[in-house]
Length: 201
Image (cartoon, rainbow, N blue to C red; front, side):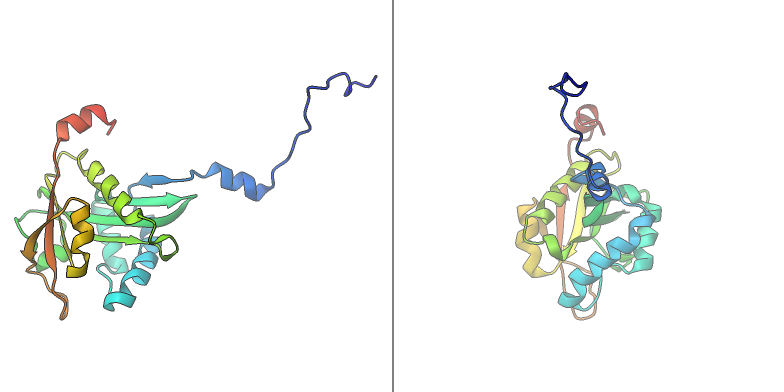
């Protein structure tokens, strides 16, 4: 009897291809804050999502880098197998309502988070990822002691989407971009102490 036949419980080892091994090591789905190194991927998704609709992007590449340098903790990216599929970028604002200056400034003493942009990669749209990411982002903000409310401006056709996410319309926004008018919306950020004690933030 050979040594191998004496050990019938041993199964032959199946070797995976290097590609399969590499794919297996990446998390299937991951949410994390973005950094300057993610700026190019962010801009690629944003450009495709917005230029076809409005002809321009809320943030250009240098502005994305600017905010990801100043306040990366106010961003959130959704990665699938290491690839960015959706993101949100925000900054702090220190006034009751948004003004033109809010488009480019980060006010470190502010308590309102201005959400500049939410975008989803074209290959994974219509799957509810925008709503899920917004929910995760609002949970993330509850872990930040500085955040008391979230503000955003959107075109009127997007108001129902943000209302489903829990935002309330404040009325016409004082900010204009070209001939586009916007609605300003707000979401209260509550439960700071409870979330910090119980969520591992």
